[in-house]
Every structure is written in C-alpha cells, then in structure tokens.
Image (spheres, each protein chain N blue to C red):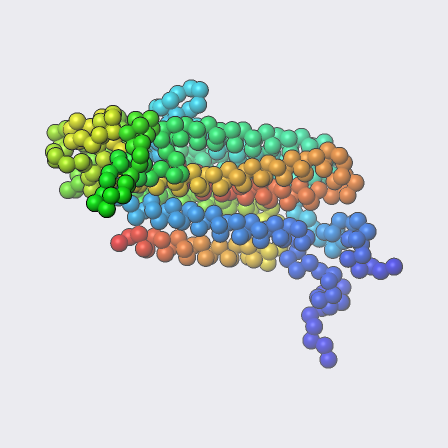
Amino acid sequence: MSTEITTEHGGSIWDGRKLALGATYGKVMMWFFLLSDAFTFSAFLTAYGFFRFSSTTWPSPEVVFQSFPGLADHGWPLVFVGVMTFILIASSLTMVLAVEAGHRKDNKDVIKYMWLTIIGGGMFLGCQAFEWSHLIHQGLWIGVSEKDFQPEIEAADGEHHGHDNAKAWIAERRIFYPVKTVIDGVEWNIGGEEKLEGTKMLGPDHFPVTETPVLDANGVAYMNSDGDFVNPGDAEMVVPSGETMMFGKLFFFITGFHGFHVFTGLLILVIVLMMVSKGLMARRGHYEMVEKVGLYWHFVDLVWVFVFTLFYLI
Amino acid sequence: MSDSPHDMVNDGEYEAEAYGLHVPHSKKKEIMIVFVVLSIVTAIEFVFAFLMDPGIARTVIFLVLTVFKAAGIVLYFMHMKHELKRLMYSVILPLIFIVYLVALIIIETQG
C-alpha cells in the first residue's frame, strides 16, 4: 500500500513534476547564495557594532562625512552620501523595471533599463571613489594604527620600536575628527577645530599639564606640528584616538566589501546586457537571467541600506 | 516522446513554464510606489539625523526605518511577496540567527 503524497495530477510528488520551492533551480540558488552573503555582511556589521557600542568615544558621522567633491570641503554634512544613496535606490528601480520589461518580453525596454542600471551603478562606484580618496587624504586608512604615531624609541634590549618616520608621517597626515569623551561626568570635545554640540571644548585652561609625553586616558596624544609630544596646552594637533582608527579600518573594509559587490554586480549586468542585446533571451523566450541579476543587484542595494544607517546615521 | 517536464526543458522550453509555474510579476505602478516610499523613508532618516540628539531612541528609530526599507526591497523589488510561502520562509527564517547575534552583541556591550 502506498502512503505517498500525490499531486493534483494524481502522480507522486517525488516524480519530479513539481518544483519544491515553486521557483526554478537558478532562482532558488540565487536566493540561498544571497542568504549566505547576508550572513557574511551581518558578521562584519555586528563586529562594527561591537566596537562601536563598547567604545566610550566615536567619531561623529556629521563631522567625518561633510565634504562634497568639487563643491565644498566641509560644511555639507551627509549631503554627498544622500546623493549616493539616492543613486543606488534609483538604479534598483531601473533594475526592477528591466525585470518587468522582461516579463513583457520587450527586448528594447530590457536593454534600455539595464543600461540605466549600469550607469547608476557606475555613478555610485565613482562617488565611493571620491569619498574614499577624501578620507584617505585626511589620514584615515585601513592600516592606520597607534604604531604609526609613535616616534622611534630604543628599548632597554637595544631593539627599536615605533615608526621610523613618525614625524614626517604625522606632519603629512593629520586626522582632526573631534570625538566626544566623558571626564568626571562632563562631556568633552577632543580634537578637531569645531565644537561638538552639547560638549565643552578641551582647551588650555582645562588640560592637566604634565611634563611627560601626553597620552591621555582615551589614547589621544598631543603634539606640535613637528610631531614632538607636547603639553596639551601647546598642542598643534591631536593624534587620533584608537576609536577613530578603528572606525577607519571598519569603514574601509565594510564599504570596500560592499563596493566589491557593486563592481561584480556591474560585471554580471554588462555580460547579461550583451546577451540580451544579441537577442539570446528573445530566442530563449524568457528573461530569467535578467531576473537573477536583478535579485543580486537588489541585494547590493539592501546591504547599502544597512551600511548607510550604521555608518552614516547612527 | 515523453511529457516529462525534464524533456521539455531539455528541448529548450522555459523551465518555469514547463513546470506550469506562475512567474512572479509586478506592475509598474506598484514598483513606482515602492520607489517613492523608499525615497521618502530615507528623507525621514535624514530629518531624524539632523533634528534629534543621538541616543538609544534615535538608534531604535533608525533601525526600525532601515528594516522597513529592507522589507520593501525584498518583498517588492525582489518579488518575494509573490513567491511561494515556503521559499519565503526558507530564506527569511534563517535570518533569526542574525537577530540572535545582534542581541548577543547588545547584551555583551552593555557592561
């Protein structure tokens, strides 16, 4: 006696007449690939969250991201990233319109909307290149660490520690992001030239004057323009806190990983566009390949939604 | 020869049609509405970023709006709303592990 479940056609459910998840193999696999990619991104983003929320100080996004290439070096907080976000959402719109055109089997429309999507993705990558270049010029990079700011010292064992060219290095690259910190219950502003709202500016009157190289509790060092350690009151620059450097590492790594997804998405889009242009999809009679690229592209947009919130807003 | 779907697929017929599937299909109007909503929610996020002081409440608002946008993209742009429920749950339910991870991070960074 058979206990097999039968389909509406009367056959066995196991005879291969029915797709288990109601979608073709290629689309199901794209979904599960995206699921695994979502795990990768959330691992990175939760690592970011871990550092962020276990730190007492953190660079303020309104201060870090306030330049607009070609228009303003500062004073336009978050405007540029707003443009970038809009471009990516718009490219998602044109992508879904390409998929919709594919359902109508309108080859011309598919080509048109895929072109627009590629242009949008390229613009987004270009914006990201501008932003990276700006931050790198400000001294932020994935490999920047405290060691880069330590002058060379000779330890008791005769070994040399620290950075050979600390002075030159520091003179070239400065990071002036103000960070907030709490000392004795009062919020202070460390570094930078602008006062953060709701804080008191750390100034000469407030510094505890010491004779030794100053590296305060937050890991901020006070130096003159030659890179010599000085009393805080004489400081011409503030070497960034460990948190600022950690911010740089996480920012470049995570936005870089996202940018790499945008780049590969563009490659696949170009390849599929070539296939569509040559009439391959029209001959096949369906545009499922466009749908699959679309899923990938929307996922890239989806990740940006989270990156945008976590790095630029919170 | 045979009416097996596999043979039809091999003959070049669209797999989805060979299996008699309804391919999820969204209308232009729906797409445009989702796009406008996503843009407006992003604008609202900017308003909160500039007008509200940083804090737990603002962070929660941002996260809720972000998840709302993410849901819009997955459900409408990626057509998940029109797929079978079992495909939807196969992809959405494993995300519970991410929620668990985030909860752990929040708890561990409180101390």
